[in-house]
Length: 403
Image (cartoon, rainbow, N blue to C red; front, side, top):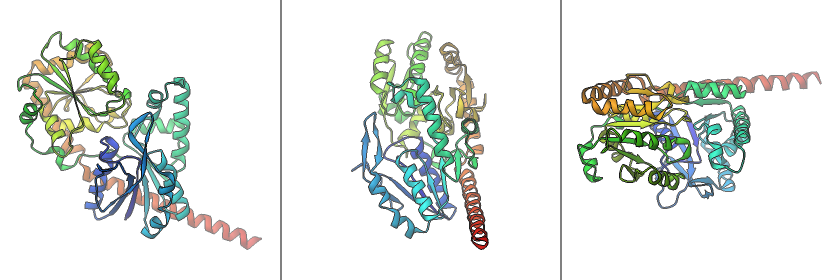
């Protein structure tokens, strides 16, 4: 198949959507398919590759890390898309990419698939605080329903997220396909060297959060939990990697909670090596987001044998299994801190759970298997589109014949 991805986000912007796009593109190409991506230009930091078409973009005032592609420049690619003879268009974001992707599909009669990467109902009110939360949630549900019903197929990263979409009233053909882990996630790396390079003593208990530093990630919960944990482990360090719009708020909370020397924010890390080494360096990976459509970072931590303590909410429910690399905590800072403490106090249990997690991640979440599932879904959507077109043409022909 000849596949066109369209997204309002991609590397160098590091997040789950960029990772998903890159992983699936690599795996689909390995299966013999052709993949092309249309994505925003971020300037000099763009990742250049012959399969990526960059479109001029501008910053978003409430989220300056992200970009919106220039609508006119993107639409001007229509003749190029037509010449490409694509079998399917796969949209990855609900902004400019969505509306132009729909337009391309209609004008060129190409089936359109969209992945619902982000739980916007639990996201939008953080960025539109001037709108009452009940209104922003209703708005997010309405937009999501309309957008999902406008395409030919929906991919949801998890079953719980698909259940939410169906409750919105989405009727489009849908499939659950999570983002898998490629071989690099399981690479042997040196966690000790990572600690040394970031001035973290080798014997210091290290907790790790990886993700966008944003309000919906529930990092405040982790800070409050850490404040409780250091009552028992006063030298424990919480490392936060990533950047995002909540950085200043998080820094203020760190100061307010008296955690200035107990939390280390180290920004973005290179995914090809440094981030993987960071997972390896940690004693426990901690995660409290309630709005994940999947939670890929949980699997990435497990792939390095690092045990996880997390809340099982929405998409993470489809990943987390008690004892399989994970201790599932209640939505309570004391229970969460107790489970982290349990792992810090028992190195053998920590190693055992970490080993099970690495095995679980490898056996259940391989990227190759999931890419085959996506390809199969593409084919079903294409067949459905062809069948519908034939049916429509027959009806039109019959109507003309009886006129």
